[in-house]
Amino acid sequence: MSSLQERVMKYIANLDRELAVSPDPKFQRIYSLAKQYRDDAEHYLGKGDLETALVCASYAEGLIDAVKMSEEPGAKVFVGGTFDIIHPGHIAFLSEAAKYGKVYVAVARDSNSKKAKGRDPVNNENQRLEVIKAIRYVHEAFLGDQEDLLKSVEKVRPDVVFLGPDQHIDEAYLVTELHKRGIFPKIVRMKERVSNWENSSTTSIINKILAKYCEKPLSNIK
Image (cartoon, rainbow, N blue to C red; front, side, top):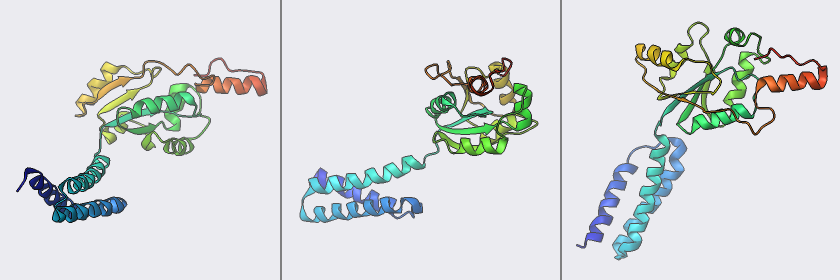
């Protein structure tokens, strides 16, 4: 028996073990295709066409590996914010966060947003949550805790906490408090705001609306 023949036979035996497991229904079609390639490999093995048999077995294994990779949880990335009037700055922020893994967003409650910004948000918390959920970079979004902001981080238990360039958070304090709760994420801060868009902050958007339609911009809006 040649080494190539042995290799093909090992591929087929391994595929039989993998295909014996019932797949997630959403991957059923991919597994069916992998089964077809597996059967083709056995067919060409029987005919003595070992090269084609190996190619078919490799295709089948590649399909199964792709499913496994898509099922891997990956790193969890936590971000928090008000996300009131969504603008390019928000999209750039979430896009950057997504480079580190699956993004989990804690949307600030109305009362907490008012405390932080000194004004009520334009959109209420439920509206803001629905908009954030619709952004493709967001894996999951939920309303934050009203009393203990770090409970949102506890809920996710992330590998990375991603901060915006203008989020006034003491990183050393954050690390210390999270360690007390048994959470040991990497803290990453986005270096700077997106500057190539005219309206890349809530303040600029509100002031532009006021200037354009009311002729009275508010200089004290955060």
